[in-house]
Image (cartoon, rainbow, N blue to C red; front, side, top):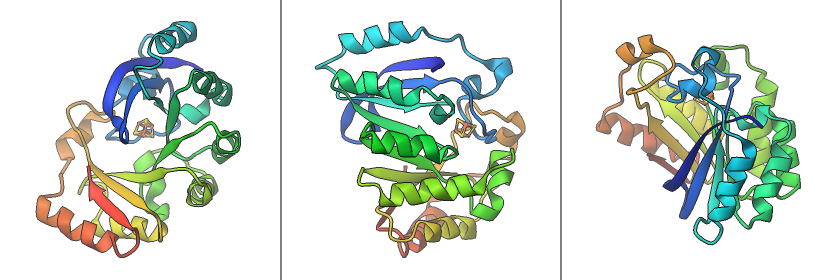
Length: 230
Ligand code: SF4
């Protein structure tokens, strides 16, 4: 595991729980709106944290925090993620994983070893448009496998999409909701453009307005049980 950041306290990243967030270094996508460029672009890499220091911090928070969120970057790029999570679980914390879904084998291992209590998977775009948003070649079988794994896993999870009119149309969003047919929770999030990977995107970004969001949420809810904008 290469750890690029630690947020010591969060009330919003694990639903209903007080958590700390560990940010792993490195990502295999290059989403223009990524607001953690220092974890994604090697030229901007943050200074790494010692794993033992992070573990010592977590030990000091047992009984005070409920959970640990493993985010990134893309955590599943790190082959030792399951053993790392196991050490965190052994301290009594719940664990949430944020993932872009590109490593279904590791996701399956984490699920089968009962190491996860919540998973948030990004859906970047309708399948035919994925590479346009991720800006790298994408193994689409891996993405669909991860979606299917989570659909059938008996652990709480959410699918979520970062939206912007310059990247995704309302039809794109409805197509993604249709891909998630029958799912419990689909969350849409507007881009935060204060810090992004691609500065040109910052200039071209066009947020959806409230009326458009209401309309798209209503249409998405024909496919998923709950859809809302965060
Ligand atoms: S938004 Fe997520 S998947 Fe995309 S580049 Fe950033 S860390 Fe990677």
